[in-house]
Amino acid sequence: MYTIVKKEELSPGVKLFVVKAELIARKCQPGQFVILRIDENGERIPLTIADFDRDAGTITLIFQEVGNTTRQLGTLNEGDALLDLAGPLGKATHIEKFGTVVCVGGGIGVAPVYPIARAYKQAGNKVVSIIGARNADLLIMEKEMAAVSDILHITTDDGSKGRKGFVIHPLQEMIDAGEKIDLVMAIGPVIMMRSVADVTRPHGIPTLVSLNPIMVDGTGMCGGCRVNIGGKNKFACVDGPEFDAHQVDFNGLMVRQRMYQDYEKMARCSEGGNCQCNK
Ligand SMILES: Cc1cc2nc3c(=O)[nH]c(=O)nc-3n(C[C@H](O)[C@H](O)[C@H](O)COP(=O)(O)OP(=O)(O)OC[C@H]3O[C@@H](n4cnc5c(N)ncnc54)[C@H](O)[C@@H]3O)c2cc1C
Ligand code: FES
Image 1 (cartoon, rainbow, N blue to C red):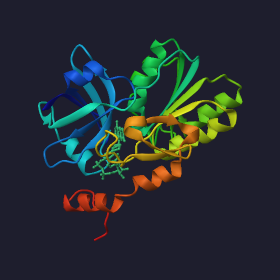
Image 2 (cartoon, rainbow, N blue to C red; image 1 turned 60 degrees about the vertical axis):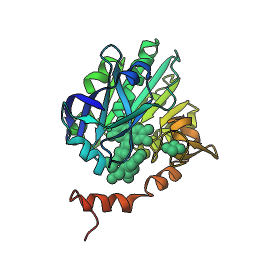
Image 3 (cartoon, rainbow, N blue to C red; image 1 turned 135 degrees about the vertical axis):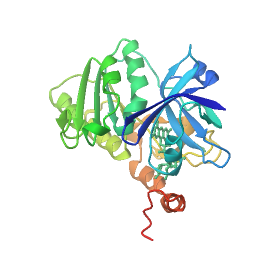
């Protein structure tokens, strides 16, 4: 069992858990994730390790309540425990001194971008971060991102914080101004990651994205997390979750993410949650 030692609400529907998990905390690296199960009846869901403390033997998970399992997770409190926590899974982010690295985080994607930005900074890179959300209330980890960035840009769709617009706008401006960018790392909604790839592709700027397909076992056995990268099938759980953004078939990813939509709606309905089946 893995005890929740701290719980915090970062914004409406976004929660932070610090969980005691000594073996995972000892080994994990930026970019890796865990697969958790709340109890014996629960489904397995992947969550990125947003932070870790090797001395305290804890990892930090930050999640958005989007459906049944994440909502159930959100009802747990300090002192409660998770039944299973498998990890660290996935390949760690390759960290070295590239020069100028732009880290882009959209919505809940700011959480997984944070430890990566910190590691790039520690490796001696100039880190320019761009974080965005639909509105000011949904923006998370501004202080943490500021602490690991040389420059921090904030955007909100409605202009309630930072500049009005999308995260790609400051990135486009940097490119238009002729600023040298050696690497872009983008994590967020698929549509955002695709837009970042579209902005950097014409300029040949190396760009990485962390993909979030449906995952089941997380060990390369079930095929559930299949993604198409440069015309080849890859498993995001063992080959990723980070891939070259310019090679990703984002349309295919979106289709596969919707595969279980009807079942997810039925699950929400049967639990009396945010039912969307129009019954
Ligand atoms: C490697 C990886 C890291 C992730 N890290 C985070 C994170 O740090 N914070 C966070 O809030 N979310 C993260 N996610 C997404 C998170 O796993 C889903 O939001 C969660 O599984 C939704 O479950 P649900 O039952 O609450 O919602 P559901 O109603 O079941 O689904 C809502 C949507 O969530 C996605 N989803 C559902 N089940 C899975 C699954 N097993 N695997 C992947 N996506 C699923 C689908 O797009 C679905 O349409 C990550 C996903 C992956 C693959
Ligand atoms: S989650 Fe099963 S192969 Fe990746």
